[in-house]
Structure formats: C-alpha cells, structure tokens
Image (cartoon, rainbow, N blue to C red; front, side):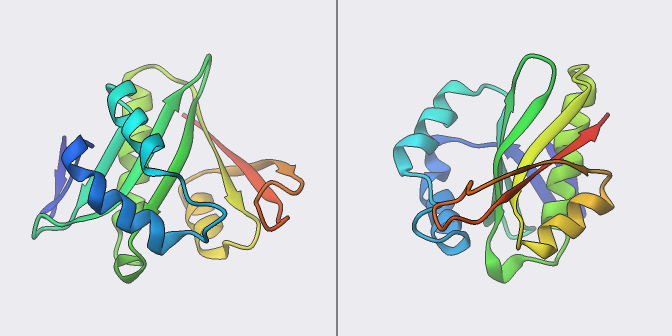
Length: 152
C-alpha cells in the first residue's frame, strides 16, 4: 500500500466492487464498459495487479488493473471518477504502477488509450510514455487507439 498526502493506494477487494462499477459507469461509454463479472475475475485472479486509489476521506476515486505479460506489464484499465479528475490521483496511481514494475524487474509498461483522449495522452507523455503504435477501429465506436509504452 502507498500513502501520500492522505491519498492511499491499495489492492482492490470484492468489497470495492460497487465503487469500481460506479467509476466505470461514469468514465466510459456503454460500449467500452467492462462488466462486473470481469472486475470480480481480476480481483480474484490478480494477487498484485488490481488497485484502488482513495482520497483522504477514504472514498474510492479510481482504480487500475495491471496485468503482467511475458516481458512487460499492461495497464488493462485505469479510471478516475470524472468529478475527481485533475487532482493528481491518476498521476500518483501511474507512478505507483511504475514503482511496482521496477520492484518486480519488469522493463516496460504498455497501455492503449483513445486517440481523442487528449488529457490522458498528455498525462502519459508527461510521465514518460511514448506512442509506439496505432490500433485501427479499436473501440466500439470505430475510434482508433494509441498504444503507448514506458521503458523503466
């Protein structure tokens, strides 16, 4: 667990599912949302890859799912409640994931992001991610995704 200025990051549990679904439903269009069963699967399966970020009051304001692949980790999903964005939660969560990968000797992190999600792309670039590929028609509405990567 990480704690910084009252903000905490910890492993997700089954008890967090309702808050995670609220974040999912308010962050993504219907065709991009993951079902509750998928979140439950990852909570059970990932012993060190599903995290929630809590504001100082203890309320869950975001989550990230990080899956370790052969020679990199993949950010399967990351989201912050819309009303809590631009307050540093995503940046802290991404730095936490980088530290986790460093500790596990994983050399890089990858993620996919909507090509029109300018705020996210800007944050990823600020944190050292670079564009490595474009995935055509990746999202349900036909929009492309940028594959981004950070070497650790």
